[in-house]
Image (cartoon, helix red, strand yellow):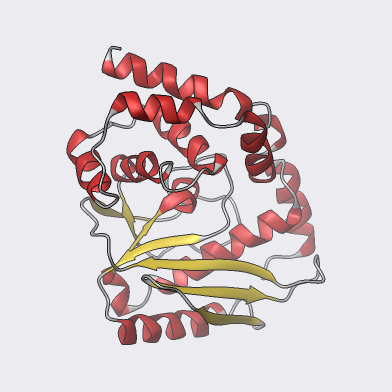
Length: 255
């Protein structure tokens, strides 16, 4: 278990609150526990927390998102075993399955000393979406966790394609930030991946539509959604993100 002194120190290093540091520590411990299990070969880590923990984004994240090919019974078994392993670090950790119309969702609950309410991390497993590109990596972190598990993770290009699709499904500042971060890293915008991702929402990828949609994001909503996930020295960025992204997209597509 991470000490209170470590939480204070890492809060200063990361320029973020202690609660967010503790949540990330829990995410890392659970991921390492999950990918020790035999059945985890059918689980692919993706989304904003993957961008943070594997691809070293400055943006902190709440949930753990996955694609899976596992049958429900095996997935429940793997999660139960992962919880047992994670309890070696967090004895008070619990997991509750959530009702959902698609895929499988659950939530981790951790009683802690810095908040009167349990810290939570939602786990979302998509059984509908197939992973096209993946590889194995350990987690990049300065937190005091042993990161020996090989995490099966979606590639940056495929995550970028999913994020560009996701903005048409929900309006969240965190998706806009992740798109900017990946573009800023010069991650390849892969047209084949985009075509596959957009098929799932019965749309065709159109760069003009994407640029218009990104430009339509309310800057005050971006700031409200993103501020708590960003270190202090990044909190000036949200209101500028739509223009920064669209400048990069226009340059890439020469429009």
